[in-house]
Image 1 (tube, one colour):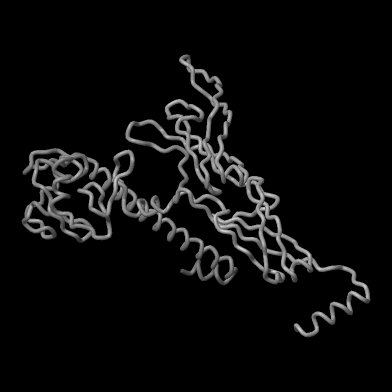
Image 2 (cartoon, one colour; image 1 turned 180 degrees about the horizontal axis):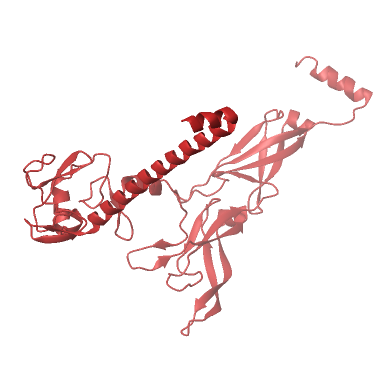
Length: 349
């Protein structure tokens, strides 16, 4: 004590540093010894858990895992068919094994079927199809949501199927131009076609054929004539049909309006005022004389019955010929002619 006081008195700072170092070293040694003891305990505890444990009651040895047969367990009670997992008890099948992974696959499926409540938000399509469901072409059942999407799609089929299994291709459409004379009196049209034909060896060759169309009197624009099986031939399909549509050529004098014909005629002003007899052309090249006693004004119309187009549904009957007069006025008059016209027409207006 005298030496320490004497040392502090001589050099107090040096002595205090030495004392602090001594205290710190002792503290680190103590802490190190405590940590080594804890590590030794943990290592010993882990070795103890890995050692085989023998279950005297069950007669089984398990590697570091205790038996799951719980008797008089305060957490699970005395019921061996129940298990505890995260605070939830679930019934378990009693067998020789204590783990759910060792359960039979069939028994687990039966347990799920018997104990799983139905989920209303989930739709099963393995059951019997409902009336709202429909079957697709391959025989599989389509769900209602997929059925609505599929039915909303529109497609333009190129080939048409039938009961025999053969495909029916779309027809070939062509036009035939006819004059009003041909549609009025009838005619015969011959059309040469060329089509593809399959050979016995599977190749394709071309052949020609002459088709005959008998145009009937009174046929209208758009009349359809169909030749079945006269088109091209394709593997696995019937021959194509050929459809001809009637179209009218433009006439120089006449214009057709359903079963009637319309004609426009120009006459001079003198004949329009005094009356006249004019020659009216008819369809087919004939002419007829028409006498008009009335005063013809611009837009005046004269109807001649029975000189129009034939009516197909009524044999022997024809439509009317409507004549519209166009009055031709003189472009020049002398002074004397104007005075005479004035004196004549002065009292008529």
